[in-house]
Length: 317
Image (tube, rainbow, N blue to C red; front, side, top):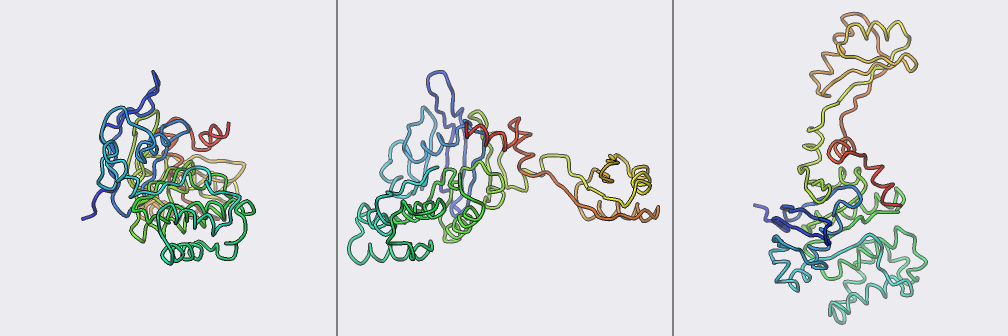
């Protein structure tokens, strides 16, 4: 049975009259990727700061790697690694020197420390730039170096707080591959992100945080199935076919300009087969069709009142 890497119960944090965390319960299983989603200001970073012992909770309990966050802070810190929203590399040092510094801080001496440094340079495809100053690295390279530095201490749990913010799509996907590999090695990943596609691609389970409260939790598929609104887009060659299809398909909404008919559907094979059989029955030909089911952005909008794009815009202000 998979054990719990992180658990919280009734976790609360407030700043004067502003409640940031209103009593949240979490259970993150060992060796999984857990994503905490929420609009800007929802309390994601505060949660990470509490769990990584950087901030004291007001009440509740939290255990990380089996240790009590409030009373066993040193043991918690020895078991975790943290990569924040911005790369924390020393730009005056080379990539190798940054990693060597971390090895020294973790008291990895001689051949042991050197072996860890060289292994991480190879693993993160940084060997060719190892002796260049980090100030010359691209954003994606800095993030890789930052994560490599986190791994020097061989953490069992890694907290990634919006790790791909500001990266181009190619660099972001490279980071996704690295995160998957870490999880495959048995490391637990606690991920906060503004990018819903990122959570959908990576997370085994997702929790949605809004105004300091957990409003939903489940697998990406479970969350998406909570939201109604799946439909099929049928495109026709002409207005005659569009009008005919609109008459025989219940609940359909035609768009005369684009010659597309929007038909409610749950996306199952059975419902799609019945829809196409209905059109065949009336000899109505379809040029093409596409199925659109609710995605995490629909879930986010339904649960928090606005889309993830709006949340990302707020975060940049």
